[in-house]
Amino acid sequence: MVKRRKGFSASHSKATSRRLQSATLGTHVPSTKQRSSRHVNADQVGFSNTRKNQRAARGVVQNVASHAQAGAGRVRVSQREFARETRRRARVRHIGFIVIALVALLAIAGGVGGFTYYTSLESQLSLKDSDAKSALVSPGENEPYYTLVCADVTDARVANAEKSYVLALVRTDEQNKRATIVSIPSNLRVTLTDGNQHRIIDAYEQSGDAALISAVSSFAGVSISHYVKTDAAGISRMVSDLGDLTVQVNEEVDDPRAGADFIPAGQQTLGGDAVLTLLRANNFQDAPERMAQNQQAVLSAFSLALIDKDALSLCQFIDASDGAFGCDVSLPAVLSMADALRGMSQSEIYSAMVPGYELEQDGVVYYRASSDAWASMMELVTAGENPLVEDLPTAAAPDSFTLTVRNGAGITGAAAQISESLIDRGFDVVDVGNTDTAVYTETLVIYKDDEFAAAAQSVSEALGLGRLVQDVSFYQFDSDVLLILGSDWKPAA
Image 1: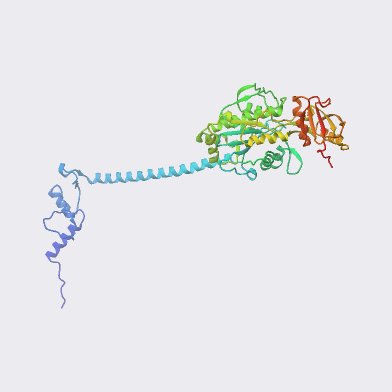
Image 2: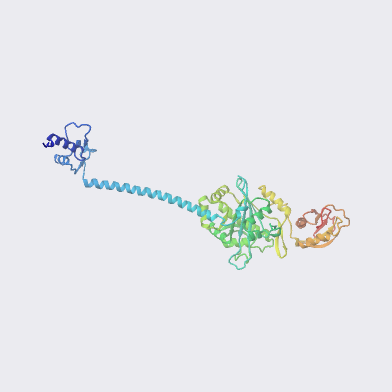
């Protein structure tokens, strides 16, 4: 026999229908019967009229009543408005996301832009392919330091123009807001690494920045920590960016070889071309000294104008200068230096130059330093004191006075030998002989009047010995200076 499958009874059908209605979202048929905790409570939500309840029972929802305002009346939202509100909120979320993303991108771009700007300033400050850093020595913490400034101010617009340089050794004391500028003639005679005598600028022209730094360091007896380098075009750009410089001109400048500008004496406000004319001019009676004063005035004006700027203005100046100058110092260090020195006045900047005189040797015009005066001056510079002291001995050009040579030690041929040496060095020896008695154990350099003290000093420095004595009518000689050789002098082998 085939057993018939039992079909659904009416009770089973109703139970199944109730389960479907309770579990179907939108089927909100009210019921007074108790539901077990297993049933979903969607069927407990009521509608505004019987027709809608009936439609909800069939799973169709057209309007949903808001329960938030049930006490004040029900607010009905159509299906279309509900969809529109849903889309609006989605758009708001989407726009919010876009705004956040844009802000993040701008922040990243700002960081990248800031880094790029910083890198650009660092690049403009750098010395490019210079070897200067190999000769520089780091200063001690909170200690004064020396900076060498080198500017090639040769007029590139003039064919075969005479080379012209500005060299200055600057001692900076940030703790006391004080600086000392020591001008160094570019034709200063020094002994370079080849053992021969050269102009100090030859070290730069032949071997580069490091050789120049080493030569100046050796001559001055100090370690150099920083190096600043520029040229005529760079100076012109910097003056343009800073605004005209106000400088004190001690003697009028009218040198066609230096530039077309005529600069009267006194306080002057100068543009780029006039500043370069002032730096190059050398047709003065006391050319080395006057050139040093003009160069110091320009360097002081530059320095005070730069440290007067705040950090942002200084960065803008460096950016606008477009590599007008280079240095070994990083941008943060430059800003730190400027901040430390801000407020420094002209009275806190000392100025001096290497004491000495010019002479011509083998067709080359050299500047020869007065060794004793230079050593005394550098002691004051190192101590942070004013190096311009009136009683410091100086030296005169060897051909600016007459000289008598006497052998006072009884050394055969001494007077003739030393006279030849002095004549080779440019001295004007007018008389050679022996003293009446050979009793001098000390070499003396004797001068008549105060005006010849510098001349006597130059003789003493040329010999490397000799005590200066002012004559009070005890010695008889017709020249401006008398040299008496004592037994402390040793003849050349």
